[in-house]
Amino acid sequence: MAPKTVSTDDATVVAGHRGTRYDCPDLAALDRHLVALTARIRQAAPQFPSLARAFRDDVDLLLDRRRWLELTT
Image 1 (cartoon, rainbow, N blue to C red):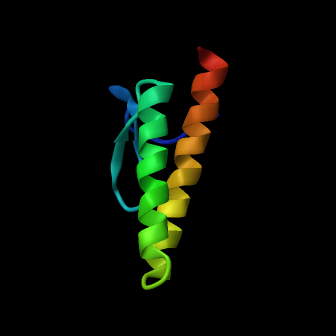
Image 2 (cartoon, helix red, strand yellow):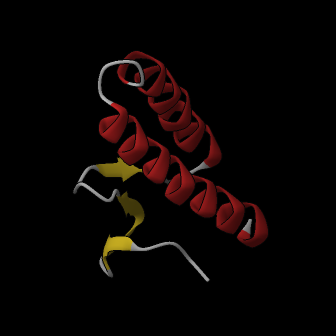
Image 3 (spheres, rainbow, N blue to C red):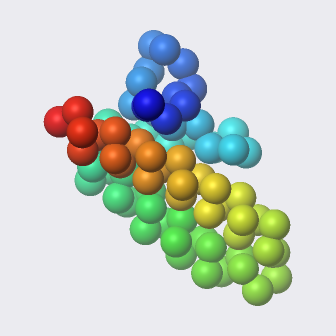
């Protein structure tokens, strides 16, 4: 199953749980989002655990998208 996207017109954009849009047309773009979110998790985790959890949830969505891209390309 493909991950949730923002609209049917733009299947390359993954919607995060907090409404963040991640443009993921290919694996390279997706990997850049994963690297950025990993850094944000490290920064947020000590003081803002709920924010870090939201970022981890977005990472899960992006990993779903990554798997879908791997299977369809």
